[in-house]
Image (cartoon, rainbow, N blue to C red; front, side, top):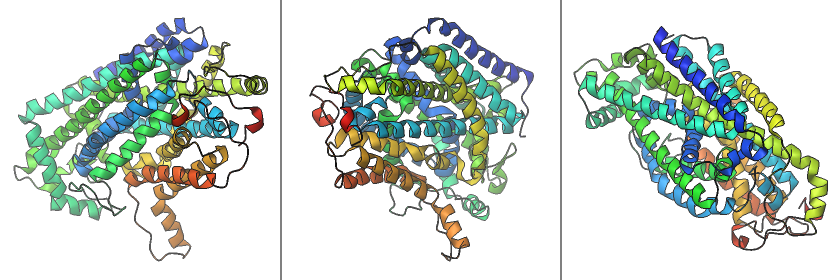
Length: 572
């Protein structure tokens, strides 16, 4: 335990949790049909959807990791993110949203059935559920560990509180509750970060220029670097644009490529994102939502980096410039800045230890908000996908026979009412995610949050995104080839992510003399996406069977009439 919350801090957190439950209960009165529960009646305002998208994707992992990453690499990470922004925005705006919004689906994985067949749809659903369970479990665990360490509250109580509250208001209010609570949570995120920045500027009489100078000094400080090496940690890395060495932890270009891959795959293959665009009225509103979310994302990332720079100056910069022994500056309010795990806790520790009474609780409430804004989205999306898939499984035989004889509209949302079942699935998904948080406690602390993400839930992101991209842009690829390519991409992701761990096993078995170094996390997703697409194209050279109808299902046939595939060629 690093610090203890006052009763005022506890009150702030309890009021926030109660407010989220109250809002969910209030919005539950309108959830009487599938369209209302799953897609908010397809009438959500574009600005609310945009804020919800970025709140769901950033989560508490970003809220914790971005300030801590400043201690690892300065502004290299955020520079890479900013470099990727125009390219990923152009790709999603021009290609992804216009393509996906042509289909009035409820589940994004309905597209895979029409394009490739039942097998790929099932694979897509399974990969999505696995990804979300790992993602949300990691979010719950990271948030709970941070709160437990800086507040003194029991870990089990925090995990249970976050999981139960997010599950209940999502179960009651459906997607409408998810989106509107996300709007509130974004406001909390921004408020907590801005106050921390202004507080440091006021009490230290400093500004952004001073903070950047302190960050550059830390990256080259020989005492800090040697202390990190002695502790078995990667030392802070000076700015570097690119390196072919895959063991180099971060460079601006590799971060940019990694973020481009993540954003593209997330906007074509992640139900959490696609479902929000489907909740808007048309493509124009979806594009507005995307731009809103992207701009909020840029703003939040920049704000959190400035928070990291401000806190770094508060603990290190103002004292290092005064000639204080550097080694003593690495110990701060019970944290050791050499330890990568502790660096992820620097912002909440600063909030509890240094901000005025009550405001520390407000920042921790913002941390909870960041966690819940992702958890509610994941729970709702899992419930939506499972509900739609179970309904379609029951209707497959009759629907496929009818679709084989006539052209149909690409509107395949279920017409019956599944709200009751969806709430049951929501409760089950939330409970499972809450328990899964405990199962992820095996992750090495020396990875840190940024390094752990591509090795856990994002190990699935690129292969799943590659499956959709194969369908959209490569008409020659059939279902079996696409599935084989996706499996190859997943294997690539796991091998690169756990390269050093696998090397350690080979050393223990006498097959290697020494363990190889860890592959940088920035190489994992781009390599997995490349393996998925290249593998799918190579496997397509050997595919057999009757080609499936492609009208309206690829980028090159998007202007042709959409025709459902016949049951006789469903497995090709």
